[in-house]
Length: 472
Image (tube, rainbow, N blue to C red; front, side):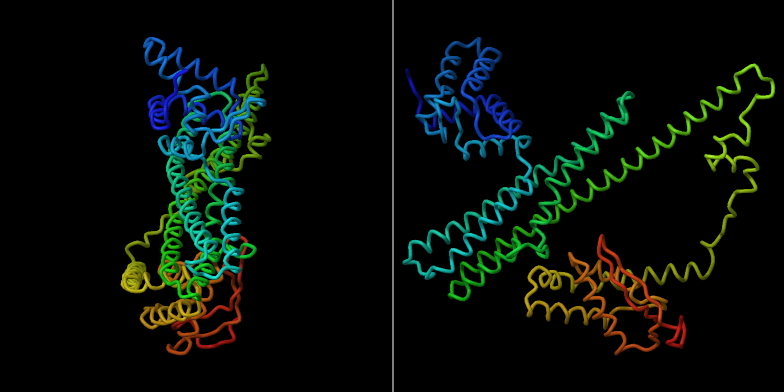
């Protein structure tokens, strides 16, 4: 039987990429990287019958190229078990086919992120017993594996970013199918929640944790492991390798923002639709109760022409009680938008925003670089920048200086963790206490919260908010 070489076989495979796409989809649905030989041959025969049966020469060409024996001889199979009837395609071939079709790109899961990090830690530990000499074959091989693995991580993250870009279309399609279906509304909504929640838990959240430079992981997170390898190179005067690692680490950090944006969209999608389901359930319950009350007015009893005020439906729906004499219950409109105090406060807040924007123009880049790599030198540089911001920051009278400064610092300085935000905030507050007057420390205490974390602080006033420091 005639056979083709690797180049010709690969070209024919890509000429009939639809068949390979179906094979990859089948393997993904089964969660395996192999396919049964008899199942593969059935798919091949079905494809030829549907798409190439009219052209006899092309039919023979496809039959030869896609035959198991030809694939094995062309080295496009990584493994073949004739006894078990299983075949495995070369991973590089499958990866290339996935790149040609973004729908086949797999979403990275928590297990895959852990495996990539674990492999990088193994390579880092392997450096401890090496001499860092180009004459050492083990060192040169380990160094090559390190850079190849980091590049592979970036490549997988890039493919994952492409997958994330399809999320908005996917979520909108789910929502469209749900709204167009008048039947089984709740079932469709639950299916939609399940898919979006699974997407967030299995793909988005692990990706954010993997890329977060401040996420706590046993024996170091991704950026800490890369930094430790870079420090090993620097300690052995291999500065070119260290600089390459630094650039790769910054490149990986750039993947954080698009995934975080996708996470915000998914969370907003879940919140919005969760509220919609709650509103639907409330309206459905009220409608059924109203329908039951209305049915009682259709009896032959002449004194039941309308729903009584004392009925259970009226009592259980408070908004109904306000329908009578509605004009008396209307809130009074307050014309505050033309008052002098409102306009004065508005222009003062606008001026503050302008001042903050001017401060951001020359501090944000340097402060962000210090946030990414929190060494002692960069921490001191960041603190100096924060003190410079504090000296130039314009303030207005406020009963709570912490609450007034915190959101402004959060915009000007990026900090992925609340602890670092509070450190910056306390540094600014202490600076104000030493450089500005009319600052009063009260006995009141409030808290700043971020997710599951919360910190209490003592309220500090600024301006003409009181002269005594013993406010209750």
